Amino acid sequence: MSRTVRCGLIQASNALNSRSLPEIKKAMIDKHLKLIEQAAKKKVKILCLQELFYGPYFCAEQDIRWYDLTERVPDGPTTQLMQKIAAKHGMVIVVPVYEEQMPGLYFNTAAVIDADGKYLGKYRKHHIPHVHPGFWEKFYFTPGDLGYPVFETKYARVGVYICYDRHFPEGARVLGLNGAEIVFNPSATVAGLSEYLWELEQPAHAAANGYFVGAINRVGREKPWNIGEFYGKSYFCNPRGKIIAQASRTKDEVLVADLDLDMIQEVRRVWQFYRDRRPETYGALTTQTGQTAAD
Image (tube, rainbow, N blue to C red; front, side, top):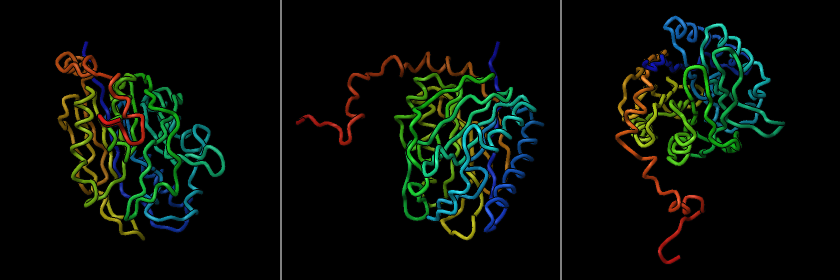
């Protein structure tokens, strides 16, 4: 019997330009609740929201006021709200939020909620950029410390990578080794910086590791900053690295695709990358500078 799962990605522009963080947050959550309803009507079973979904990409500046957007996970209001929404629709939801572990210790996090509303756990973004112009994430986030978990949901085994993580193949491999069937990467990236990599790296991860990838990017320009256009183009790719569904560049959108999980076994029976790995030779990956023959 075929294991086909209907999955969805939500890409959206910022809903409100305001100095009031509660107003910004409410506007974005309200907007996403409507988009989640659209996904439910399309019978989506696993849904992922974009990076830091309940606000703008505030890392475009360095200002401590944005620390007030942090929440506890899973005890914060957004995770608890999404647990109710997930149970209502029988839908697995990946919920990226700005997490406070304790005062002064903050993470870029995604909570994973099962179709019955049960909180399964969280992933914390490992690789934190500090890139000019406008990606000042080390000001806001501590590097993730929870490893690369894979979550056994009702419909599939789900892993999460977040935005800048996608430039690092090591974690993508660990997600495969940990049993991921679908890896979601909620992102915020602009034209002129890494767009040329957008349709290159993640399909390569999918092919190298034999799983599906769902890549999400927000859309539009966000005031008052001018770091560029968030170009959307969210997509799903299959274990062969082929993009099978893609959203527009400019519009709010719920992208939906049916993923045939049986393809994972089919592809891995041809490409034996896990069998042919040589982990005993990869010690240099765990050192800062690697090793040379002279060493």
